[in-house]
Amino acid sequence: MSAVSEENKTAESSCSSSSAKVGEIERLKSKESALSRLLSEVRKEKLECLRSRPLTIGICGFGNFGQFIAKTFCKHASVVATSRTDYTDLANSMGIKYYPLSDSEGFFNEELDVVLLATSIISFERMATSLVKPLKKYIAANTNRRGPLIVDVLSVKEYPRQILLNTIPKECDIMCTHPMFGPDSGKNGWFNLNFVYERTRLGGIILDQKANDNLSDDKFVEEGSDTIHWVHEHSEEHIEGKDRMERFLSIWEEEGCKMVPLSCLDHDTYAANSQFITHLMGRILGAQGLEPTPIDTKGFGSVLNLIKSTTADSFDLFYGLYKYNHHSMNTIVRLRESMDDVVERLRNMEKDVGNKSSWWDQERTKESGEEKKIDSADKASWWGKMVCKSQDDVKKGDTRYTSTKK
Image (tube, rainbow, N blue to C red; front, side, top):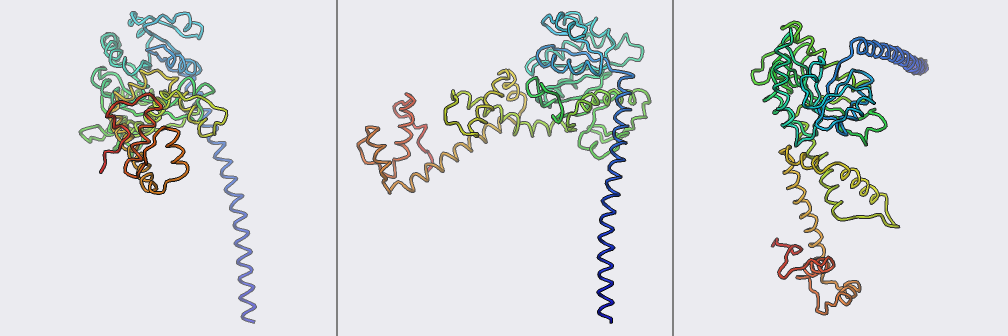
């Protein structure tokens, strides 16, 4: 009887456990549905908040990228643009007020909340410096003695960060950002595309990015001193500055971007090993003059797509990724070393099998006109010379294809 009783208890326990699991799934689904409704309500409230007091965003540099982001900004904000080239007609057709770069006073008199610098990397310092005088004049005439939020969108981050901190008046907050997409990759919308950002300066205080990762939203650490500040300590200045930053970020959030808070230092470290090497390989392969063939593999198709996407960008951008990210040269050095290592492995393997003269080796020797016997010691060198000959690029004593390692 005891054994039967134990079996009954086990069966009841198993049944109870099974019922609990079914009930738990139902409870979690109900909770999930409630959270989804809450999220939808919060997003609706946030959107209403943005529309109730839309930002006025000034774009300095109305080239391809400036026009690209302005088109989307117009859905969420009032947009004003300025540039060296006259884009008056184009801007007006987009519902954007336009000022020539020479009329910086008129540009800033639009009471801009945000000024976004959408210039090339190599033109960035010149553009930032040219804004200093009109910014100071605008701040002096402003009753609250505060300037707009200054935002950059360059593909490198440490360089513009330092330029802005060194040149832009301290009355202006600064945010360094990198939308990791452009007119081509973002032509069908920004959903699920990365937007990297760093809140750099708020209320005249430079923020310590590493320390601020572990703090609540109402606190921030000052870079260099490790002093913890409260958003409310300078009342309106910090509160409005933070609110303006969040409103600007919300535009990208509403368009579906994947928001990536990241320090400028970490961004450039990662970018050298991702964005720069992608452009570098695209340029190198593009220089080979590769063309589609009737027997292309999917892998080769990916290579051609890489070439197309990277060479579609200006060489100025590629140069900027190299020149203004000090991690880029290390990427080039490591690529060269990797190339040497791979080629060396091929040579070593060729030497290992060199003693076994194959039909293929004999045929290659006859076709090339090389009648001498190829031994394992100079086989790699011979092949290198053959490659050079096929490219009409052999010079007497050229040892580019001959291993120098002993």
